Figure 1: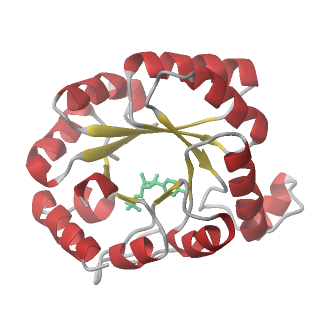
Figure 2: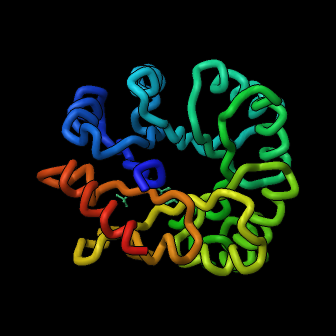
Figure 3: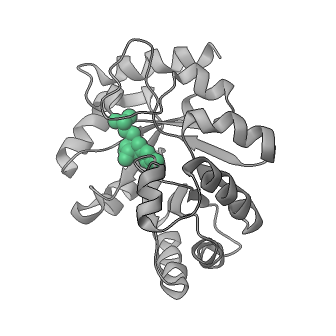
Length: 228
Ligand code: C5P
């Protein structure tokens, strides 16, 4: 289970991020580094954690012209990482797959529809699809483009598995252990329910990174996961 729990290092600087990884110790083996840490040494931290045997999810959500996405992915492969996100638009995903190349074990995930977007916001942006329909369309396109998996809400995971099978990763944020605060997340599930719905990896932020005892919080989530 440990390799399926990803703790988000949503912290403003390296010293706070390193304090959290130290506090988590052996309880956590997989961390997510996103756009908040990237400009303040996130890649250096990623390399240090990988050298210490941890896995790293680089949640950079690449979205640019294909040539740039391809080159950016190649640069990231050069630095190392275990998971990388790009937006799930076919030209972006094909470019990321080309940039990753044949020899890297970096796995590519498509971000289907940001969980902060609802149907009204999608219409405002110019989409004729509801969020649910756009998620399903983009999962299909991600698989056609050769991606390794997708990011989706734990509530979408069950339908995605039913429609598209088992042969790819589903990484789900929006995880809340039994009895914890939802915060700003709307489409949430417990760790056990997310796994039952077909998630391969759970991304957990505040329930661990804001806990007074992060290692204990992580171990409690691992026991909930084991219950599934
Ligand atoms: O604190 P919390 O558990 O809500 O954090 C969830 C993490 O997952 C955050 O780093 C957030 O940016 C990320 N995330 C998300 N929804 C997505 C993609 C990523 O909540 N669709």
